[in-house]
Amino acid sequence: MRLRIILADDHPVVRIGARAVIEASGVGDIVAEASGTDELLSALSTHTCDVLVTDFSMPGGQQADGFAMIELIRRRYPTLPILMLSMASNLGILRMVVGAGVLGLVDKSASMDELPTAIQTVHRGSPYVSRTLKQRVAELGTEGVSANGKKSPSPRESEVLRLLASGMTVTQIAEQLHRSVTTISRQKSDAMRKLGIKNDAELFEFLKTEGLSG
Image (cartoon, rainbow, N blue to C red; front, side):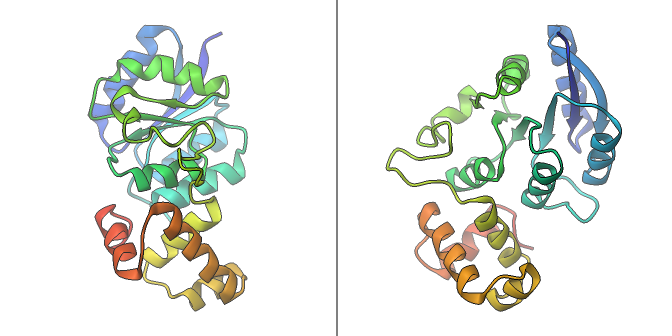
């Protein structure tokens, strides 16, 4: 069975290369392409899709932030396998991506030859990590659990970090998400512990380094 695939990346060269590899392999057909988050959400609403292959962060719309986009797609399409084209090299950011619901990671700075295998793997419901990323995420495990037993930040914890990165305070986040300040503080602390971050200075440096804060 040829899979129906939506491909999203804001770089045309990446989309052209990915489409060529996917369609030449016979694994599936690109039913829609998107260069931004608004286009992606529109494509998902109008095309039946078996696998989404997407960049992490693209310009445009209210969901330009990578985590917000992933969390929105997970809510709207909870069973859709997501394969992320990643440039991330930091283990913490990869943990957060997996915790948000991404099933596969392919390093788009390396060869795209892995794409067909990765697409088939995530379509079966199994996790896939490309060769060049395996060493960086070796401790993740299939459920995002590291070798020392610590879990990845949960989607809610990742949401709190994303809002902190946008400049909001813990109190403002609690008001927006309709949670208590105590709950938000705990989720922030839990996420920091899972990422190995010791204090607020390290946290905001991490968010800045990973492009999550302006």
